[in-house]
Image 1 (spheres, rainbow, N blue to C red):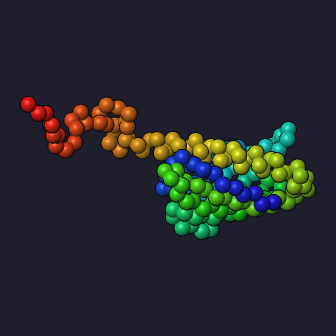
Image 2 (cartoon, one colour; image 1 turned 30 degrees about the horizontal axis):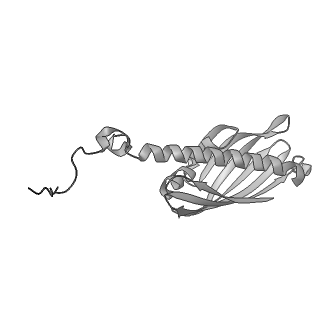
Image 3 (cartoon, rainbow, N blue to C red; image 1 turned 90 degrees about the vertical axis):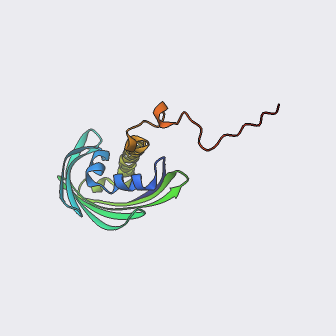
Length: 179
């Protein structure tokens, strides 16, 4: 089953790239992650509880970064195993600047085998869609937080504080008084 879409994010492309290209950040965005371990810069593993109806399916997910072109494109593969299911998922995203924000085009090709996969696309599609929406919502919140923490934080001054603005006008001033 292939799911895809576009998500508009109110953060600069570099900020979005840093969040979605960091395995530890991505683990925070995924629902049901119970534990997470980075093997190396291209491989990581997560123990996940995927919600299915009344219960949840516990899976071990092995992730591999397949390709990346910073800060615009990345692709990854996730293979999951659990009691009653095998999952193979390839995902990719393309980031482009959109004004002061970022437009993210994404795609996921999800294949599920075993008794859970036998439930069929009609049953699994709403579950996959719900999981995708949770990840995208968490991503939107996280990149907004990351972008806000950078605006003025580098100087240690909040952008809205009075210290961020000079009391004196810049440049020479001219008076045009006549007697």
